[in-house]
Image (cartoon, rainbow, N blue to C red; front, side):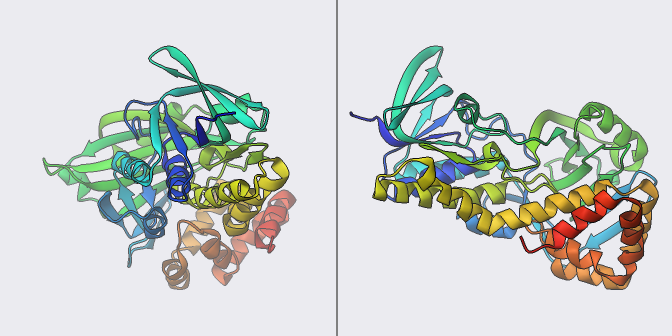
Length: 415
């Protein structure tokens, strides 16, 4: 049977474009399907990444808007601690330009970009058939394999009956401007993080400076999320009321929402299919960031697909190698971070306050500055958990909440 392509990649975000780019470079015929008219639009991402992520994507600093060196952590009870501050820990990027660049890389390598909304995928006689829609017109596409890089609510996963992640954060984001006076009240190279069970149940809030606008006002990305107990818009209002000195002068430009998976999908592979990025739940559960992890997974997806073609083996037994590969590189970190997150959720407000006070000690400040890594947060978090100033607070949590202790133990295990 004649197939329209070797591989159909659904979704031209970072995960899909990187997979398509690497496969096209290997000489495979690739169709990259994207339902939106403009790549990267609408953006639902805070766009905070590490310098490591730039290298993983093979993108220079042309999409970088602003450099960040540290973070202020604020609690709902009024506690505050500054962490980092000496070297660049992260950069805020123009997410639309970032996605466009990756998609252009894929096309330059030979991938065919198709503007279409995929509505269904089915397995048929050793290949897959995708039903797509363009301008209201249905059409079909056949391929030997499909890669689902179509986000949290993946249609590829849903129509093929693949199990989905079980834990999510629901987020509200606002891009806005602040006055020069308000901007001068806090360091422009610091992110602000807001935590508290009543403030953002199950998740947190943030302010990310992204530079200066042409009128001299600061541009920021603001957001907050919850795990479902409280609507994000309600949580945002609480955060703005609790910290008027930071939010009073915010002038919203654009609002957006999004859902972030906080756990792996039970399986990221199947007969003739791989899931990559948010579709597979490959997201950092401590921060919700998914660009770096999706690029790493896309690298392994492309390797596994190439091997499938070399062996002419497209069944799940062959493609399980993909899941083993990405979990070997980032799975341990994602598991550790998830356990640490659940440990943190077990802490009372008073215990969080004591931990924030402990983090002000010079020893922990130096440790944080030396080992901070937004892609591998467990490296510094586990060191902090073993430090003397933090042990009293953490010990109180583990004694009163055995379930929390189990999560802390699991985070330390080398698995």
